[in-house]
Image (cartoon, rainbow, N blue to C red; front, side, top):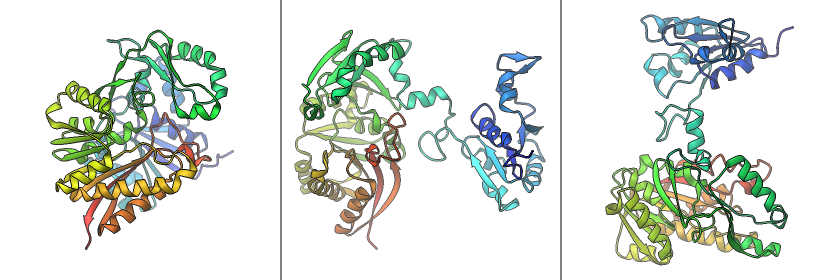
Length: 435
């Protein structure tokens, strides 16, 4: 009996696991999958143990129900072979780094010209654009970027401590079970209960900060996007560090090189220090907390960028007015405030605060400047933040372009049926003159 996809033909250039597994699913449902392998560069899955009668069990599993040919894409005449093959196929699957297929003369445009109905699927570790596009992608890299690898520490410094917040009475009752599970699964150096959130008040719970296991130091070393930080887990905001913006901060790199950057509500420099490390010529961090700005200076020194980083202590809105009065201009402004809308009843005042913040930030942008506008208010949908930016730009007689959208990292997944779980929004925009 033919499978449901028996009418499809798939030309598969992928190796290792992600691509072959994807084409395996198609093959198991009846698709005709032809793998194109380099005769001079073996797919490493072929040598993975265990072996049965000289064949890798992993390779046999991933490539069942498929055919294969050997073709060196760098050899003369290979391009013509691929173009001839693709005329008969419905889907092309490849997982080279961005641009490799184009260099070989068999990229999307070339194959589309040969077969206009072709579906072209490219699997990449970090996408077709962005600062990591040229990097090879492997599971351990993704775990590290997602922040998961850091939970178990590095060999040279041992396991890391965990900082845990419980905000509900139900979880408070089961905190011993939570602690036991964390110790068994993650084997941390220490565990800190950072249960000082105002959310506990609504549950009738006391606020407290206490070591649950071992002793957590005042400052904990961590690394994000290749930049070193020390976070004040005992006295800092929430758990001491905000991992949920790490992928948005990674996207700063192409926008800040050689630029003057303003980081508003900087805390200990998550955005600003990374901007300096990514090549910004000058970074100004603004925060109302002297303690937080001490952290900025500490982290700037840690990364050797202290001479590029200046700190301004004070109310952010007042600082924005003073910078405008001094006719200061910045190439990039980052506005990542605390949640202005903590509850639905705060919606009207919160939206006004976001509007005021972003409009004042836009006033400081140089021609064609970049605004990174973020919100962690779960009650503010991305469309509403986008409309605030449109209205603010229009009020200043500026055009605004959306360059990138961002959200929280993959370890803070979004429940598609609960809109509020997409609490992090990050919009990277360019402000242009009107007309």
